[in-house]
Image: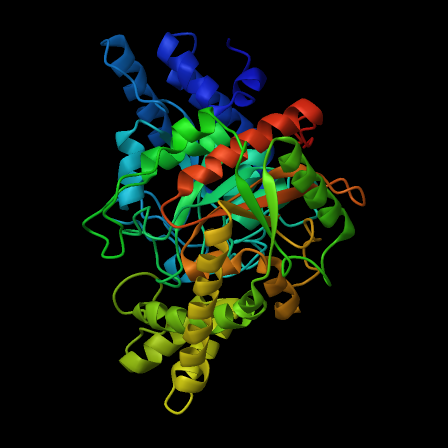
Length: 500
């Protein structure tokens, strides 16, 4: 097969199989995706940097391995779009911010190393909300990304570049990070699959920190199996990351290949619906619950009262940690430096650099976090938020005594128009209403497509939540739902692909 349009529509698993069998070369596959990027990314703006030479060099190395008869890994030669929050040696890493514009890291993040070791071809770095702070990718210092379903709408955030690259067929795989929903929410609004692994399951070494107790890298793809294959590549213990879990990676690929919900107990939380939820989102979610019943699952109603406090707790904990983590961007060690003309003190250079380098949302969160941590307010705000976090964790523990997994809508609404919530931070924050509790507890969660909302014909996401270290349950349930959905209604992305 040499038709570029056919190549870019293959799944990652299909692509890897064809490369291993010699039906396609890795170079052919990479060139097809680079051509697609050149053709459509001016409109979508999924990428901040395309590493054409580096990608082709990686692809040639895969073809040389195959020519020598070496065994290729499950994703060898498959292209990937990497969120611009992971350091990549010799390739710009900006985190969507002017304060790191042009910075070339001298080392690879552990996740980047694992991708290269698995012979995954990294096409380039994707656009994102600055320092991963946002739900729409409008906070990028380099301009917003469009949703391939409707370029006037947001592709989610903070990982909107990665989700848009998948939905526009610029890459079959992508990497995102999830602090409060930034993998799952973009997946939901673009009709793709996104997974937040158990906290600590994927190394954070070399991932630019926003909120260290919440940040988690994870796989993004167009199918559940593709996400599982990528999950297996990037997960595992890393001694360089003190928060990394020293435990075996759950059998996620096996689970994705043997999807079933027969006999499983599936929880539905009453707090994940109500005011603010779009009618079409609730309709598709209710249909998904009925589908799970048809597949043999037992549905259990759950009451998790502390979930109503999750948004408030998150927006104290995350900014507090951000105010600490971003203190390193002082204009003195690396990145942007403003005002260093001999007439300003070191403190003035730092102040001028931060004023020029940080965007409005980043400044807002730094100030909020600094206030919450300040003398006299620490116990009232940050301390109280941590107590709420404990209550949320306990609610999850009680829930998982009754059920194997929990399901909910991933987001309360479909993709909203670019600019609609730009001047209303609270409205923007509500996009993460269903996803934040999982980050606070450290559990695993997935979003996968469950149809299109009848009001606007835009994708709706189904969220599946599993206990910590039980990531394989996500793939077992997700694969069963995906197969049943495709059989019943057709895949919303693969069969009704948006046109660019």
